[in-house]
Image (cartoon, rainbow, N blue to C red; front, top):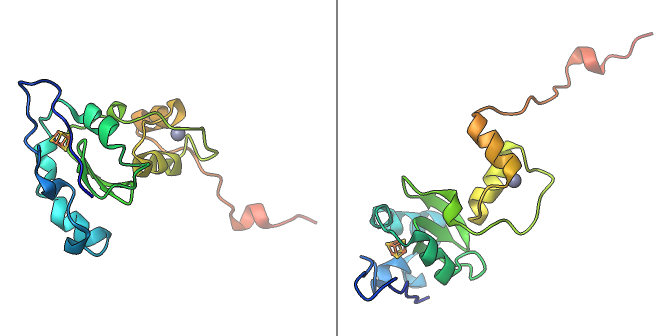
Length: 146
Ligand code: SF4
Ligand SMILES: [Zn+2]
């Protein structure tokens, strides 16, 4: 699928401009890992790019089920499968709605895969660097007395 991430000004031209390798032909990959292999060497191009957020806004990779490189991420079927070093999730759109898994590591993973910003609960967990304590069912808790 062809796309163009238009330059922000007449003076600025992203390195990827008109480079169709950023949205490769479906003939060149067959699955997630072959697309990843195809695009991984292009991803660092987005590292210093000052228009990552604008690029994501224009390409709309999630709703358009985009395959390729846009906004510092590699997307496959609209899912994020790799992110360039130094990218910030605030470049991404807000989540559409809260989920029951928010505030857990699964919630963090879901935001990442969907290419959306972390909600407050997930961001707090991510910044704390700790996982919430999970209640473990052990033999003693399963044993009933009497
Ligand atoms: S973020 Fe990446 S794909 Fe988007 S314009 Fe910049 S270099 Fe191109
Ligand atoms: Zn969340």
